[in-house]
Amino acid sequence: MSAKLNIKYTNFLDLSYVPKKNDVLAAFYVEPASGTDIKEAAGAVASESSIGTWTDLATMKQSIWDELRARVYSIEGNIVRIAYPDVLFEAANLPQFLSSVAGNVFGMKAVENLRLLDIVLTQKFLDELKGPAFGVDGVREVLGVKDRPLVGTIVKPKLGLDPKEQAKVVYESLVGGLDLVKDDENLTHQDFSNFDERVKYSLDAVRRAEEETGEKKAYLPNVTAPTEEMLRRTALVKKEGGKYAMVDVITTGFAGVQSLRNANSGLILHAHRAMYASFARSKKHGIHMLVLSKLLRFSGVDQLHIGTVVGKMEGDRDDVLVCHEALGSSDEMKVKTYLPHQEWGNMKSVFSVASGGLHPGHTADLFKIFGKNAVFQYGGGVHGHPEGTRMGARAVRDSVECAVKGISLKEGAKSSKALELALSKWGGA
Figure 1 (spheres, rainbow, N blue to C red):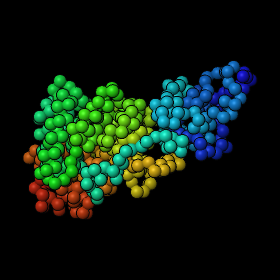
Figure 2: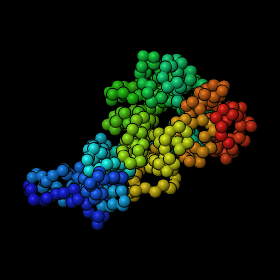
Figure 3: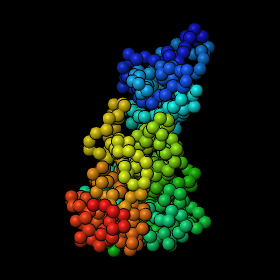
Figure 4: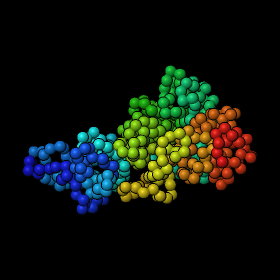
């Protein structure tokens, strides 16, 4: 051991370094604190997220310094790129990865603001992580929908319906033409809605809707809970003939999501991102949704909420599209990123989910933004229809058919009373 290395934050800078294949890459927006320059702040981030600390260490060995330290290899304005030897990480342990790269660094006095913008993981991670069980192609096969976006709704009101009342909403939505109906993010198992009863009644509604329409349909129950209970709930859903489980991935945590995927339940995993905006919305501090999108694809979800561009939720076009591209739902890579594109190998793609304040008048724009490999979810835009849920669902389905055929919504409304009424209420062309 040696106390002579005299390590400072700036020693973590190596601007001539060329990342290697076994390096995990991360790009940060770094805004130094008053009295600290960008080099010292960048070095502080690299130090705290790898092997360093705030002072020299008698316990630091030369071999550790040479082989394991993170290296700041690029600084462009406030954009800092760091390379980490992948031996720093337990490959299949995403919580440990985040504890390092997105852990203490956000609380350091050396930075005024810090945002993790992007990551690129190595083949070591790809070899250990399962990724989606179904992916876009698998979901399409289960539902028998090949050449259009999937369409769904969320049961409204968010909370308060009993299991039989909810099952009626599920049935009306599916018979009206939708593919999917899901629980809202804050509905799990409450006094007014017993989870087990809700699943049984709603899946019965799915079966009746399938018989009536001749189409495959699905109900997405929210299984979010402590891990053991979450796994019990997914087992129940499978036993009762369900096709999907929905999970609130941020509040559940990556350990819970990985446990759910590793259970191999045979269910499609639909990921809701509730709470993400608490650390992803700021442009200067926190974590970009792109990072979460990549990590959740690695974790093994099959569908993920990423924003809408239109509708009620925050998210500009490039921020949403870069996530869409990272999930593999887009055939083209149009949005510039701060790091090389992630190599995914044979890992399956993930359906992007657009949800939040949508109505049929948004459909043409949604199709232009996302193309066919997305799930369009309309909540109030179904149940707020002047003639109720079934007609609201029909308006949505007809609007999607218009988009796929290249027909304007206004033209499509001439032969669809449901769509005409929706456009009259909410607008759209």
